Image 1 (cartoon, rainbow, N blue to C red):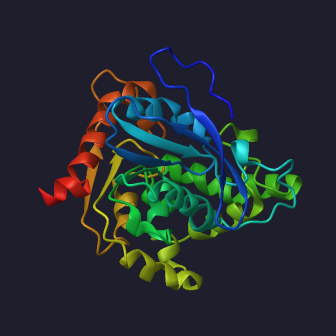
Image 2: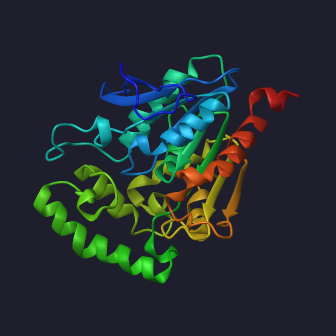
Length: 299
């Protein structure tokens, strides 16, 4: 066990634990203990290629507000990465089916309401979970369909160049998606690259993939109250991309929210939801989750 360095004295030190995925893979995770009265457990489900330490400030903030928070590095990235990604075999969906499902198994066995905050892929993953029924409420940020046609024109051109010319060369050279060479995130296993590239060719992501027909029915089973929020200046998941994906949760009580950067603030983009100046948004998220706790629903 170890603690994350550079915390202020008022913050609980996070406990580094080994989270065993459903298939036995060993994952690095951090548990942030709630301050004072415990209001619930919360899983922070991160974005593709984003290490869990990026969400540390949010996790600490939620812990100060009374939530036990779990963050994790999915297999293949961050502290859950093997010695080499070359030859490392996995499916993109393993992050949901095996890794995040294990996080739900761990926290869901406790007698506290379990909440979900997703960033990008983390909002996708809720509908893939085999145990999504344990989640009391979900708040997703920046989750979209991934198709470049939904993006602003300049960003769409960049993304098409990446998928068509730049990333194939890098993957052929390295044997995996060496994302870090471009300064765009953590390196990704070959299986994640192949799945992601394929699904981003479809306007509704994997819902349009003939080989993924089973996914639609899995999402239809979700009844968890959800908010899917995205910033109007998010180049990868603007509101229309979010809407194209979120319709997959067709039987869930789901609302969408368009976020506007505050005057004088830096753009939110795709990553600003979890930067230090986003604390007012974090409080809104946590308050919404508590309003949808099982106890609140009974009152």
